[in-house]
Length: 431
Ligand SMILES: Nc1ncnc2c1ncn2[C@@H]1O[C@H](COP(=O)(O)OP(=O)(O)OP(=O)(O)O)[C@@H](O)[C@H]1O
Image (cartoon, rainbow, N blue to C red; front, side):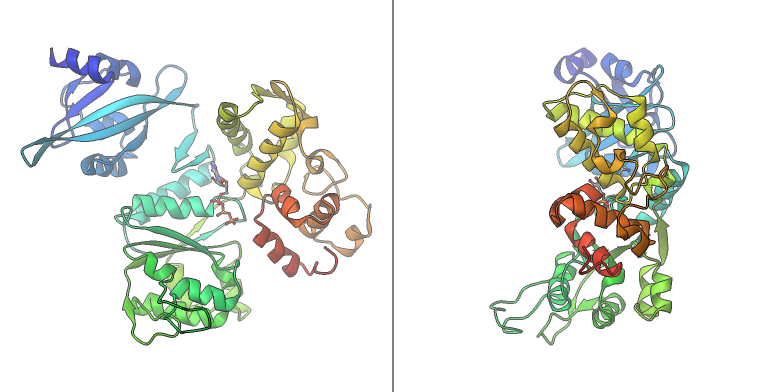
């Protein structure tokens, strides 16, 4: 009777005891999970298998919502959303009610969704395992990856998997601001520290107290600020600009860079002592061109998302268009792929994505980035710039009539990154 009532009220549901063992299950739950539910089975194990047991078990125990990938059912796998509610008697918690529903995502063999990151690439999956291992300890992690490859997603996954998940997650791009602004953004400032400093203002370090601070593009931080950051990491205190008293902070640092920090140290642009503090655990995200099998997977997933919200519905990708997508070099990585699809949705019609729907720089064999193409001897740029990225930036800027906002979009970079690359590649004045 209770099961019938539960099913009528909530559909697919499981009731767990204090040890997260299943004491009641509705037929709809067995149907959704596609498995028999043995009495007293461990819920985390049934839902997620051995590998993902730890984070899911923790989430269930704390009554947080979780998403779990379920064991195979038929040819594919489904993502089931699991919502957990505590069952209490008086003040004591005596169990957990799990409400299950179909999240509408389907998995093929080998595909994984990890904190917003889809992949079927073995190196990416190995990286996820590293994140699971290190997230719980407070060690500093340095993420290395090209622009748009998912560095911020990795940092936020570390935060979510850690004991700090209830605290703040803050991100700051160290390349985005001039030195004095970055200093005050990071460390805060006291009233009267400079003109316009009308009140004490905490910086990101303080605002991330009991949480995680993500320092994106950390290699771009000026040397004098590196010294100050080192002090914060070593002493766990921060002194805002213009202040005297150190303020204790409890922050976990996750940093990211697209460069080799070691090389930056060798070149004298980065402090060795800070590098050793920040890269206790180095994590590498492979670029999209190093994992070409992720291209069709991501195209499919982004199409599923866009189909929900767009005027156009794309059901399939024409083989010629997929060949172009697979061969392209993706300097802006996953972000660029997302932008290319946004372009295709906006510019084309019909249920098949065809080559003509793709931005010209992907399709035109004279443009850069497409791997199959030996850069053509067109403009002077090719002679002048041996670097393919430089040529590509110039070409895209040329096409956008010098509009850096639009060029950055096409390249899948933020405007700040584009600025920085223009500077680094000595294109100032040319671009
Ligand atoms: N594996 C993935 N699956 C789905 N979406 C992804 C994946 N990797 C990245 N993305 C998406 O791509 C975009 C760029 O990701 P993110 O901002 O994490 O990259 P980044 O490396 O931090 O970029 P930047 O170098 O500009 O700081 C985001 O919209 C993110 O959601």
